[in-house]
Length: 163
Image (tube, one colour):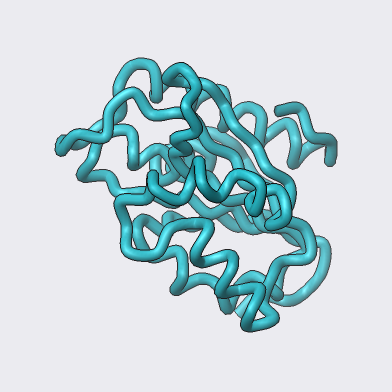
């Protein structure tokens, strides 16, 4: 499907039926539609099926996961981790957020056990304002999604980590 090399996979994770929980999917759509991405960058809307894409991880030099992250900060606060080890410190704060079967933490731990971890991993998210049933992001999460999209684009262009 894709060749191993200096490639980046951006995966938007989330459940669009629960408001801001769909943040990652919205970010993936914005990123794919608003920017001309290099051919070395692929964007996927994983929705609630992140684990289905775990076998793709080793094919990329970098994987960027985007999801809503409930870590006790004010709504719209952007959160970032740059490795699975960073998640180990935050697991208690983040694992309960997922409204999908296997969340980011569980999928990444499974990838690690299966020997399918990406060479370079970044998890970016924002604190949700609401995860009540309903379609669409709150104004706060919508603004956070736009900031995340711009930050990812800058990061892809420059190779730095602006978030």
